[in-house]
Amino acid sequence: MGYLHDTHMSQYIPPTLFHCVTGTWTLAAGQVAGTIAKHVAAADESSVITIPIIIPSNSVALKGAYLKSIEIDFEVLIAACDALAAVVNKVTRGADGSVATVTPQTFTYDGGHDAASERIDVDQHKMTLTITTPFWLDNGEYVLVEITADKAATTTIDMLGAVANYDLRE
Amino acid sequence: MGYIHDTHMAQYIPPTAFHCVTGTYTDAAGAVAGTIAKHRAAAASTGVINIPIILPSNSVDLKGAYLTTVEVDYECLLAAATSITATMNKVTRGADGAVAVVSAVTVTQDLTAATDAADQDQHKLTVTLTTPVWIDNDAEYLLVITAICGATVTLDFLGAVANFTLRL
Image (cartoon, rainbow over all chains, first blue to last red; front, side):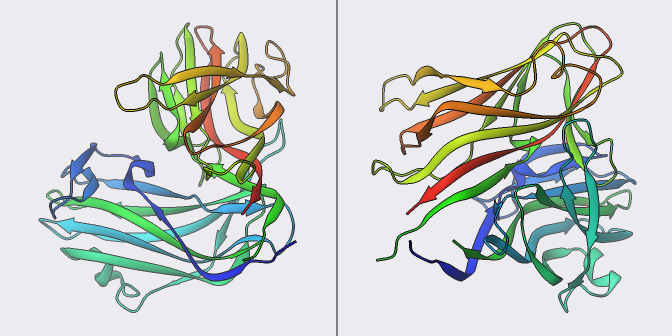
């Protein structure tokens, strides 16, 4: 049997897989021709965008994907948000008849987004969330990144996609 | 060249990838804070939820992903459904100018459709392929959940996990 251990794996997660609640969300062309976005219309409200991390898992310990960081590409347009913050949740699936269990994971923002003011300005954003203690993903688990964007009345946001970075071991 | 043969691989499929028809479906927070769901509003009708099995495939025989089971996490809320039944389709892609060809894949489900799979509760439904398959690059697999619903029941689909062997 062979052995694979690649520390530079990445998985693109398209905006079409993003789970968006609160707000009027549409599929739209991105600001750059040829790109795609999930776009939320202007409204003074808090929208919640949950990004499912679609990396492989494995039922054997220390195999499969070892999740290290997640990069999220988005644009804040027209006006700054009032606030924007992320949470990384590990969801342990419930057995039949039982609810799932959610465990927040500790992470740090990149240097360009560690201050609240850096996450809300009108600009293109590549926000990296680095997991403090990376982990191997079991097949009874999955990861959701939840972004809460408290928008001003005229703010719009384009969510362009995300990339999960992980080690793959087989 | 190395050789990988891992029999314990799994792939999470989020509810945002599900294809839902008949009924009113919305992205909603799950019943547990921090989870997400594709929510079906109450309606006395039969909802059909297609779950695309997004695994790698391979154009070489006996390589790529060998699909064995799919687990579906969902909740029946407010009331029991009449039945929740899983089937699977293999879609062989058409050549340019030709339609796709659909063939049924024989599967079994661990929860009885009209009782255990349909009661008001959290569910983890395991669907097992009677004959597991290597996925060719010209084939797609869709797990089809047919939910016969009464007037009161609502459904939250939380996601699915496909279990497979990876050989490279």
